[in-house]
Amino acid sequence: MTTAEAARLEELFAGSPLMAIFRGMGMQRSLRLAETAWTLGVDAVEVPLQTEEDERVLRELSSRAAANGRSVGAGTILHPEQVEVARAAGAAYLVSPGLDPRVVEAARAADLPILPGVATPSEVQLAVSLGLVWMKAFPATWLGSGWFRHIRGPFPEVRFVATGGLDATNVVEFLDAGVRVAAVGSALEDASQLDRLAEILRARAPLAH
Image (cartoon, rainbow, N blue to C red; front, top):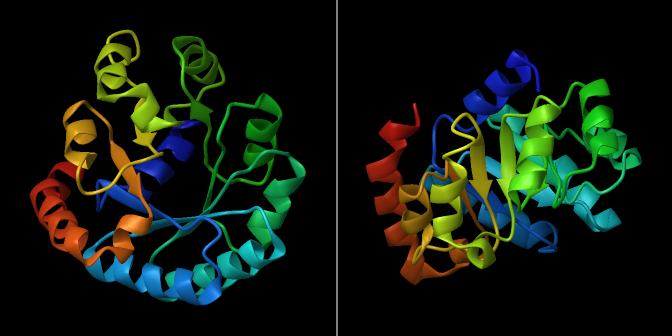
């Protein structure tokens, strides 16, 4: 990842330590949750691309986000050919569940920053060797918050976005462990969690700059 690429992700996630992921939620549900996220103060939204409906959702959300100075990313990028689909639909960044150098190369060719998925020191080291600074740690709750405390020792420069099983009950634990951004999904539909998420954003947002 070039300095410019890292700077783009830094800017993307500067306003909030939380991001939202809408996997397979359909158009109306995704639009509703995106508005909830944006109103709450969660600027970064990810739409995993697994169906044609997901592509339509990404296109619509990207259009609405751009009109409000926000960005939407495309997730579950498994193959290089998905990069162009995501770019055409308006994605501002890409997210993969794993680390594939071919996908990283395709993302760079399309001038799209990418968060590859990592879960081991070897994968983190490989990502660093490819010039990457920002990475997705997945599945976060399976790895546990302690993983991040340990991995920061040999890789202090890496910025982690933690995804998988996170909600208002455990995001603080992961943020305290050094996670730069924590991703939530269905928690945005749980009224009992929204107030807690709002509290976390109020307490943590200034630290994100």
